[in-house]
Length: 301
Image 1 (spheres, rainbow, N blue to C red):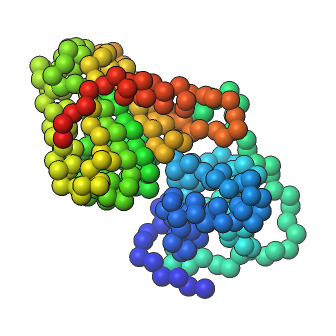
Image 2 (cartoon, helix red, strand yellow):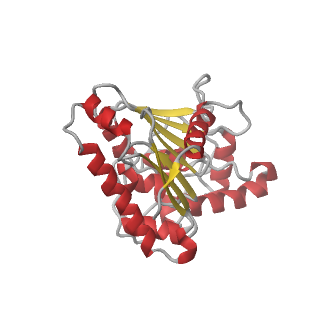
């Protein structure tokens, strides 16, 4: 069965990625819709249990240890008949234009049990030493492309304003995505303190932040009237402690600001809300965002 596609396979591509691409299910939103269809056939209680965006793209990149939870495996096997979960997560060495029929269905040795998420991680699913390492593995388009809501606070918000295209952000907003952007006030006291802490000349961060805010303001002016309500811009004037990005109320990325170090040197933690489990760090940091947003100052677009 030959299927033609111009896209190349990355070195880490696995069978799951290739099969989903052939079925036009490689986007998180499309995958989740199909996932829920099959979850309902197995057990209605499994609907809505699809992986977060960050987890989904780790599945496709092969950046996983062992197999997903058993319920995920059951649903994937329903979505892709003839393939076992173990086979789906094997590295695919052929071209993306051709995937063989499912392997023989003769009895196989029992698969290794799924690797459960380590206990005591409090929602943390990945840790990176620096921001560039994080951005390489999870660039902004992976985080934002299928998002229904984006809430972000930090200093200049470069990931949203410089590393994500205006066109992509406009498309999101016109399609109903809500974006809340909370900048460190470029006219305030604490951005000057951060410039001194990083050893920067005066006004370097002030100018960058002002330009980024103006980028969003300019984009806001070009939106349709209904989409303009979906983009909110605010500032705060407090010590800058964290860059926090909350996506769809299930994925949270946190980067602390270190003393005497530029933001790119910050370690990065990825957290995913765990359904049915005690509140962890996802709730802690999403609440930090909400608290800061509540006492922030609205910017006239």
